[in-house]
Length: 391
Ligand code: FAD
Image 1: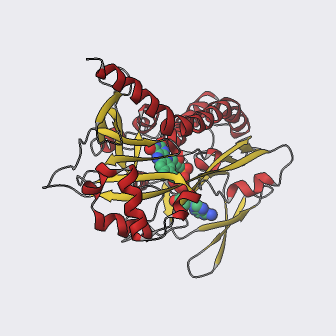
Image 2 (image 1 turned 180 degrees about the vertical axis):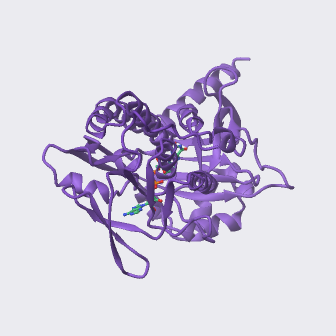
Image 3 (image 1 turned 90 degrees about the vertical axis):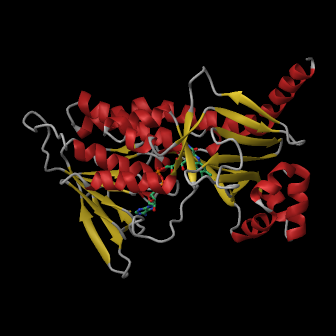
């Protein structure tokens, strides 16, 4: 049931909200605005991922935590997503000699969920589409927009350009946001972007005898000081392993022998689990991907445009909070809308005021954990081992 509230003492519900970007945050945001009864137009540069054969994204799976769940719950999507997630109740630290030791996340019973990115995105698009007042436009790549007129210029797959106007533009077009380009031309817009020296690469660990190759309800970590590997479980009983390492180290490995030597030295216990053939194949399949941290403020321009998700705050993935923070953006914006009766001229500056400090804190924590995960987890593990050795 679409429980859109009656519009008597509300702002004009015929207002058109353009959500630019149909990734995780854009798709969820479309639900939020549609639930309020606005005329929502979502524009996504890619074709509909629900029809595509191969979906190219940023990571195969990700960790959904409390703040993300709260945001999903508000539009009735929590259970749908949680039911397809795999609980990770603790970290599982893999030592060089193959010993595994769990480190709990928090109090007993607390856990985070490993969810499939493509499925999550598809479910959110479908949920948005269920609102009669929301329309999804795929194959629309935003080229530019005008703050004066609110007009956006889109490039269609056939090369044609299309001009579209909206009352409010919501930029959810990710870390390399085209919406943000207009912000950069404005006076008093603060912006910083940092590429970390590390890249990441994904490898798949297949099931063994029809079951998970390792304990499924953990986030597995192989901390190795300057680099590390992690593994998150998938519904199909595979694990997605992600190797995080400085680009210069990735570049040193150029032959199959060198990859195997590297795994033999640093992740020997993972070789029989991933498989030698797969390691040799996957390592050279795609180059390591870069990771960028973006901080900016304000998040809005006048009463015309606001940015959320990675467009406003791309963070390094070591805190597992990028998507979760983006989801929370939608919830916080919705609360501010409620508080200020959907008056964009008040809502947008207030959103910037309350949201910038929190998102910047998450960016800082993520950068801190970038160091913590590959080194400190290791030293904590040594302390733990020492403790056990005493018995
Ligand atoms: P995106 O997911 O990047 O979506 C942006 C969308 O906009 C895309 O669909 C794109 O096609 C579209 N688009 C781009 N440009 C245009 C344009 N010009 N016109 C129209 N459409 C456009 N977060 C977590 O919370 N937990 C994790 O465990 C986690 N793990 C991660 C692991 C890795 C390796 C990485 C790289 C990130 C991880 N993140 C994680 C972060 C998470 O991926 C992002 O925060 C999240 O994807 C942000 O969603 P978004 O919708 O803002 O941006």
